[in-house]
Image 1: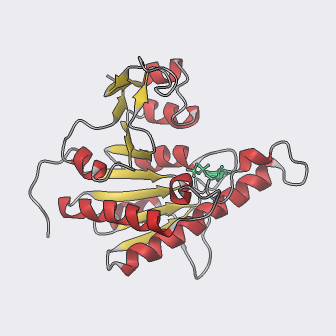
Image 2 (image 1 turned 90 degrees about the vertical axis):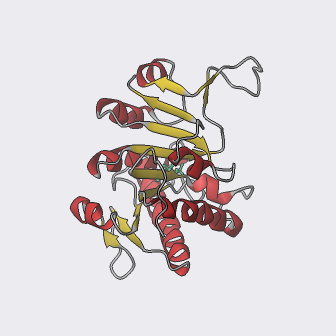
Length: 242
Ligand code: UDP
């Protein structure tokens, strides 16, 4: 049942990294975390928000770590990385489907009989009644799923990108080493780009900046954060063109 509550964004792209799904393991997927993330998503369904999920693959493979390795060149590494996002996407898709939630999986790199090809206009139709999981990155090496999240947010006309992280948001400096670090609730893209703040890669930031899509960074480990953000609580850091 839909709850009548003031909501902040009507359509979101939620970016979930593969790293989050691995938890304390060195790689792979921690089932507890997979279920946790599904509960967090389930909690926002009564708000009637349209949800696209861009899923990462860093828990299984990252192309950039292959750069120095002669056996696996960067492009091959990235191809394996993109396939990793499909593996995560499939797991997320079936786990959400098992909870009887409407969900659809699309991939820039489709696999016949396993996952359908990404199609912008189909995704815009589907997102009205389904959670749409977007796997395969953008389908090209040398990019990341953060860039994918920004690109898909623009294509699907989302109101914001919600980047689930393990940190509360953006600080002026590393809060672990500098107790006087300032926490930003709001911050300008120009500042993030100028200071080279590494919460997303620069291609992702530039895209979001140029197309004026806010990125909301928040700590997914804090239960209820997603719900709180969407109902207007002052949580995390919003990066946009102020
Ligand atoms: N990747 C790619 N093109 C894309 C998206 C991802 O080549 O458009 C590859 C790249 O090797 C990346 C890996 O897939 O390291 C996993 O994605 P990412 O690192 O963004 O996952 P996350 O850090 O979110 O788990």
